[in-house]
Image 1 (cartoon, rainbow, N blue to C red):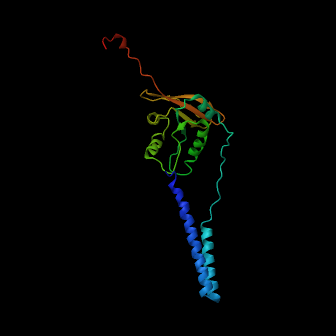
Image 2 (image 1 turned 90 degrees about the horizontal axis):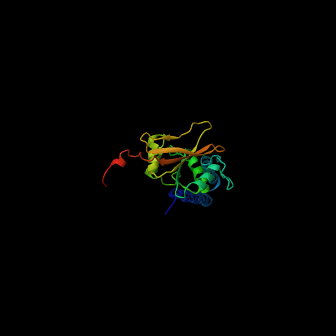
Length: 216
C-alpha cells in the first residue's frame, strides 16, 4: 500500500534535474570540441543564461513556519477526553475543512496532532486520497449544530464533539427537532477556548398504555 502516491513527483523532479544536467554537460562538451572563439563563448553564454533563468523562475518562496505543539503540551480538553471517555469513543473536531485547500486543512493537522494526546478515534484527518463519503460528511456538517449535522454525525457513530470557539460565543447545547439526539456540554477548557459536547440518543417516551395491555 502507498500512503501518498503524489510523493512520486519528487522522483520525477529529480530525473528532470539529472536530464537537464546531462544536457548542459553535453552542450559544453560540444562547444569545447567543435567551436572556437566567439562561437564557443556565445554557446556558453546561452547555456548559462538558460540555467540562470530556470533558477530564478523556480526559486522557492519563503517558507511559512508555524508553531508545532511540544510533547509536553497537554491541553485540558485532550486530557479530559483521555481520562473520561471510553476507549471506543469517536470524536469529531470543529472547525472542519470546508474546501480542498492547504489552508483549510491546517486545522485538521492540529487535530491530528492532539489525537496523539487523547488517543481516541476521530473522523477528522487527511491523506493523499479523500473518500467521497468523507467529503459528503463535511458538506452535511457545514451548518453544525443543526439537525442535519447531528444526524450525520450520529450515523457515523460519533459520540463526542470537540469545538474550538471564540470567546463569549453562546453554548451549542440543543436537541434535534425530532427529539432523537441531544448535544450536551460536558467539559469546557477556558485556556484554549475549547468545549466538548456529547452526542447521545434521547430515551424513547414511555408508552402510557403499556401497563394496561393484556397478552404477549
